[in-house]
Amino acid sequence: MKPFAALSALTSVLGCALTLCVASMAPAPAAAQAWPSADTRIIVPYPPGAEPDVLARDVAQRLSAATGKNVIVENRPGANSIIGTEVVAKAPGDGNTLLMVDRLAVVTNPLLYSKLPYDSATQLKPVTDMAGVRLFVVTSPTFPARTWRDFVAFAKANPKKVDVAIAGNGHVNHIGMEMAAQSEGISLNYIPYNGMAPAMNGVLSGEVQAIMTGGLSAQRLAQSKPVAVLVIGDERRSTYLPDVPTIVEAGGKAGSIPSTVFSFFAPGRTPDALVERISQALVAVATPEFKKVYEARGLTMFTSSPKTMAVEMKEDGQRFERVIKTLGIKLD
Image (cartoon, rainbow, N blue to C red; front, side):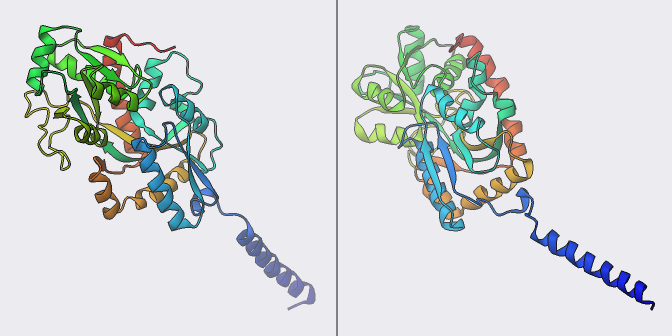
């Protein structure tokens, strides 16, 4: 080989090697990196001790143990979850800020408020569902009706005279109770409280006659005083309140009491590949042992893909829009 040809060949080989070296030193795309790659915060738009807060803290602890990264929960309660949701909607799309929220709030807030400080359709991305919450109807110790059929009969005989505690106008227990009322042809009087804790106290004290609430809260109410847990909005009885009939067993209509879901969302600018990676990491947390712990607390643990979650939220929006229009709620 001629000297210049040999030099040219050597230069070519060195060039290729250098190119491969540089390529190996370049940062991997976000989707290929392990998640979390940095400290991560989970925004919970509810007070400490609420069911989604407890769940988020357990998820954070397991993620930290599995990855060696700090995963912290930050409570930003208020305004029907809008305050905390806005924080995530406007956060960078780097995977370091997530939202744990009742996904029905994400669906219904755009229907309830004509002006939100964010656009949930473009500034939030579904990541995965984490737990379903089956809802119960509970009546106060002094209320005469002790079964669902008696409750309906009393409400029909006394239109707008049954006071029902709600954790704020437009809360899921407001919309859910109205769905049940519409299915039975009854009219109720809704009394808004500033959150679930004071609403539950209103039931215990007899200030109001009824409330719709999740399983953990229903258990607490049942253990505190002789309230009546009338019905569960599901096709099967719960293991933690096994004596409570399902809505169908109680003579009501299937699907007339909705379930709610605690879910994770990422900022809308997060790349889809990174959303998928986060989803996989969160799904891995939901081990059989983890599910068993939470099912004993009244939650039904399940996960979903971002696409499945988005489809179900669209269907929820169509269903709840009709109820909200009937209620005539506008929260501006």
